[in-house]
Image (cartoon, rainbow, N blue to C red; front, side):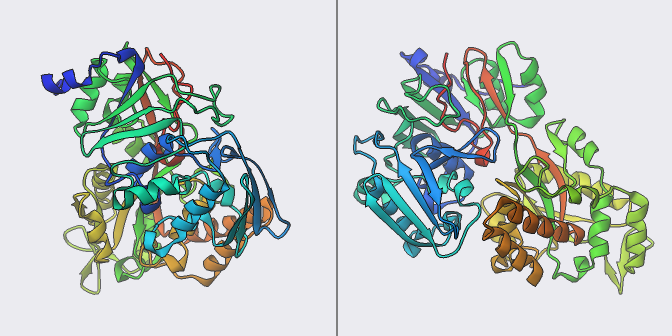
Amino acid sequence: MIRFALSAAFALSIASPAVAQTLNMMKSIDAPHYDAQRTTWGPTSDIVNMFQDTLVALDWDGRTPIPYLAKSWTVSPDGKTYTFKLRDDVSFCSGKKFTAEDVIFSFQRLKDPATKGPYAWRAGNIKELRAPDPYTVEYELAEPYSELLLQLTMFTNVIHNKESVEALGKDYGIKGADGTGPWCFESWQPRTQIVLKRHDAYKWGPSMYKNKGPVKFERLVIKIVPEDSSRVAAMMAGQFDITHQFPAQFISQAKTAPMLQVHAAKPNFQLLYFGYKITRPMVADKRVREAMSIAINRAEIAKGILLGNADPAFTIVDKDALDHDPKTAGIVKEDLERAKKLLDEAGWKVGSDGVREKDGVKLAPKVYFTANANSARVGEAIQGYLRRIGVNWQIQPWDSTIAAAKMAEQDYEIWSVTVPYLSAGDLMNIYFDSKNIPTPNRMNWKDAETDEWLKLGRSSLTEADRAKYYALVQQKVMQEHLWIPVLNINMDEVVNKKIKGARPHMIYQNTFYKGLDTSL
């Protein structure tokens, strides 16, 4: 039974005299700041996308860039220069008019080494930015980037007001931030709440929304509620309107609750995988890697661990994602007997204790993951499956505050994360390019063909060429069994039934995105 763990004081803090004009939201994790250019952190991105805008937006299909701050664009024949025609009716929350100068400032800041932008690559290799007039930007790349428009939909590439950045200095994204979004940054109490207010002048919503602005609520209050039980209890009691961080184990209960509705983000690309550090002797043999991958039952894990809130993943790229290669679908075939045979062929023999060994070494790889994530429960399930083939996973969960540092130490054979991505190219350029060794290419996969195909995919001038080269990469890395793809994790938005028009978006785990069609 769920305990209603909200204190009286907390419950009272939710109430507001203008309750009909306030949309109350919950999230489980806060962010260190709300400066989009200085982080990869999802808990930053979902808030940033509400108060700042990008040149282009991502349509509901998860693969089509559509006009936003840029009302149109053209691309030069060599694929290097994008000419964006900007809207002339956009203003920041401060009242300052939006022009090409803001676009140029934003991308120059993103690319400035002093910013240390971890996702600066998403803007492509910029050679020069020019503004021939206040509402035109010439965006010249040093080399073609076939997914530039797709990547420009990401929160990293939101447009900033230079005056706000300079006025706040190191407090930018902490004490405030100016934006052109449908909501305006009002206040932030770390680990407690973020308050956004309506941008009354906003009327430039992307075509994916029926309402082009302004939003229907005066304020949006986002409370930080870390405890799963408290979030469930608060939604069940009607004390909050919306959350996309409802515990998976209670989704079925939410679906039958008379006061709630559950909306799944479709499509949704969130892969839970376990990766191999192939330079470690224990997992250097491809046969060993394949054996572990095909010895597990993904359907049972999806049903038993995620309670149906995930789909089995047999490929690293979801079938609905841009440039997925259907030829990879048959590479991973679950087969317990074949798994045992592969380990036999690789020289790993079953010992007296049931654990395989070779040259006096037990087949007992170290497996690292973040403790408070799906990877922990899934890792334990896989550990049980692999005992049946003589593999003894040494699972090591780490608290989220130190997990990244522990992975950086490199002392493990296998690790796990859940990664959100936009497309095949997005996922593979991050993880499989040798220039990204030792992280995020934790496999230490250094392959000249892979690097060349990724480069050709990035610089392709046609969709067909891009798909061709990215297919080659998918086939190769799948055949090498560099990862164990396990689950495509569902992303659900749980909403009070009094709220209308809430439709979750898949972009980088954001769901709410702009909230333009949401109303009472």
